[in-house]
Length: 334
Ligand code: AHM
Ligand code: MG
Image (cartoon, rainbow, N blue to C red; front, side):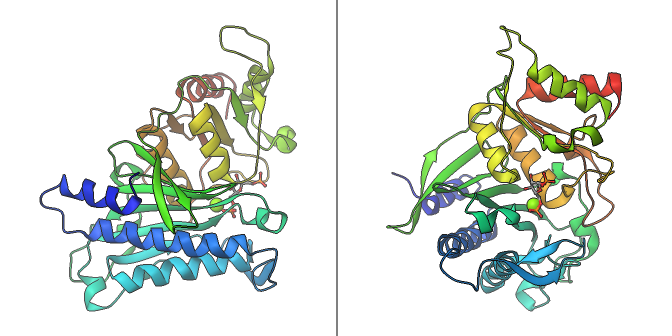
């Protein structure tokens, strides 16, 4: 049995010049994951956690109490260790520069969706936490700037998610494969349970909010019909599975093979998901596991962001399925 802590230390030793800051950030995330896990598991028992907070985020979405709680937990855990220079989140209007001596001298920044799929929390369905880490581009010793956050996904140093499902798992990459750790609550430890995760090349699930079908572009409609057609060699029809938590849908498709799509729709002309803290980290994990992620045409990781809360159409999963969706979008429009 290998714990996440041991694994992080082992990996750090492979990089002789490593200062331990990235390891420190991963430890902060591990701690936040344990706290969020504990509170999610008590969500049905306490009214402090269930329901809406009464506020909206900058994107006009109602914040759940747990969104706010998870965001504060992440921020506090990161500030306490002082290994990041700045932080940006789905729940905050703009980025936060950790403007202390330690923060100004730190070399990484972190972006997060602290509680993805939070509309599921009141009905006891899985939610997740997503994170994405970059090296800053502004000079060390100064407060971080917007430029540090608007880097293409290709520049990510590490990314991952926590899925609070029937068990809680932390899955992450530092660009050297993807590894998954299952939480043992009785020990308070994440244990390496899924080393070197690989996404099947051909999938068997498609995950999309089909209730929006009439609002989808023609290429996406054609792809859905393709998924439903009978074809022995590709194993079609594929099964439809949509949890409505990107993390959970992605996690299933990573293990079993499948595609998750949030396309442009008439009500979401740029898609719904955010490039920086949803699209990029999941795309990095997908590519590291042998899968693929596009906006229908271009690799997600190559997009140069222009805004912190920028949205992007998102196609992620098994390479054969993402490629097929791309072909139909090229032929019929996305
Ligand atoms: P959130 O970060 O505000 O929870 O929104 C993102 C979520 C994804 O996890 C999920 O796949 C999608 O929104 C569901 O949206 P919809 O209800 O439109 O299908
Ligand atoms: Mg989200």
